Image (cartoon, rainbow, N blue to C red; front, side, top):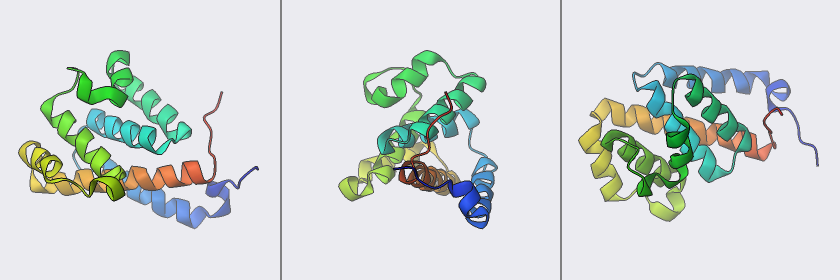
Length: 145
């Protein structure tokens, strides 16, 4: 079943989402880290549109194919820094919140690698990509061929 175009169906809602997206981009977290977080959440949520977009954006920002391919199995690779690993674990914990309940070990990891403000900023970025994923999956957005 074809679904609506959420951008044209409610420009005001998309204006609010874009304002949130722009705010998260200006919170001081590394762009490369933000793209890894967005990619991982989008993989978990099965958002093809967002996986395609964030993998592409990460490539344009200089991310290697090897690391991009390793995001889905980041725990089993040596490709990521302790800071990135903490962010990816927190991303998974919050994206899968009903199953994980944001475990103490994941919170401890972000506490070691991120300042209190950065922890809040990272959490907002994770919440934002999860909201975008709900639009993408819910309305069946697909990447352009």
